[in-house]
Length: 148
Image (tube, rainbow, N blue to C red; front, side, top):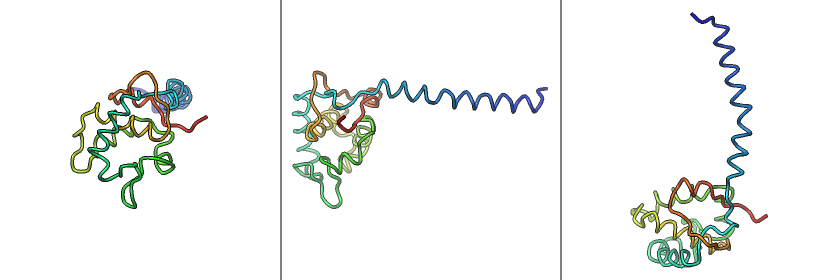
């Protein structure tokens, strides 16, 4: 039988260890983050995304991504306010599971990645040499952040 005091000691020690390691875990995650300013999509992907956007998204969000009083903008300060400091994986998961309204997942994962590439391009984030992948675990490492 284990004395009650030793159980309390073990729990206290484990709690201290968790809190002591928390900054290490956070800093390692931050170190592995990729910024959208590093060019995370290609021009060709954004062009495909524009075509998919026009076909599936523009009827609600507008041809110029401007939204309206009930539909969120996908460009400019409103978009940036909502998504800055968040991973693209969160945007991807939301878009894939909710859009288009009544037809979620209808574009296929590569189609959603293309549309997000177009949205990034429209918001002035630079293109790069590799396409934005359609893999949530990779997208979770890419952060929409303010220009430094």
